[in-house]
Length: 392
Ligand SMILES: Cc1ncc(COP(=O)(O)O)c(C=O)c1O
Image (cartoon, rainbow, N blue to C red; front, side):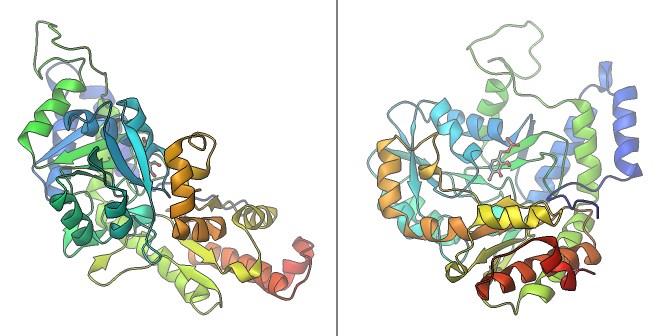
């Protein structure tokens, strides 16, 4: 049985044609044609004024913090449960990450915990649209406004998600996206920074090209800065994907619906939520298994892997991983963030790539149900044989 991979893109002749055109023609006078088209179309799609193509979402967060003048002595609040890329740029700029708890329902930043983490040093907050779920943006923005804290929305995983009719990425002073190969819209590697603010846009453009103004022909650098650019071939790929975005998002929602049909009634399984007033595009179909099964994510991953099914662990709380565990802020977070520590050990991302079919989803669900059943019966799970009666 072929291994089912956890994530991956949908590439058609359109993407191949655009990239072939870029590699053939996007040089000399045309060097920026695909960047310009991708950025304009992306900004229009998100509903913001500006978009800047970048080599990654990590660099987009880095530039956002720099453009907001976040630096040494400042604190930046970030949810404890996210990929490290949401937080690492806080360290790049010399500031300190403060890990707030997540919400039980959305798995995204809790507005109450965010408020409790604010000190006079808090300069910014980075809410994350985890797995495509949307946080309570009104509540987060209200706290941010009251304490004059800048917002960088990490929408790396959430292209197409919505909150009260506005698209993910449009809620902060800046919004950031990832186009890594695992994402719904990919450029292989890549990212985008979006903003409505003139000052942030111009500062980010300046900082991402070694501290010189866009269009500078004198190679005259005013500051030591960064080289964060995307190639034309990537921009062409991104544009082709964006022109198919509704199709990609519809398919993601279809994949979730297949899973929901199979798993919604399984006792003790919680799936991604779509809170009222939001649209979730389910980048990663995710389950949280009730702790009464005593099946933690690492064991569950192993058992799924024995069935040739690739899964990913729900992110570990950042305050628990070696990269941060010795920090005072991490110690405090470990005491404070009860929801993060309750959910994270039991969460699993199921295969959600754009190559999934209903048949593959059924295979994943059958394997999962069998593992749960064996476990709830208190049986020791012996592997393939025990799963055979569920195999299609
Ligand atoms: C929530 C989140 N933020 C940031 C990133 C960083 O994206 P990139 O790999 O494009 O730098 C990712 C990537 O997986 C992510 O999931």
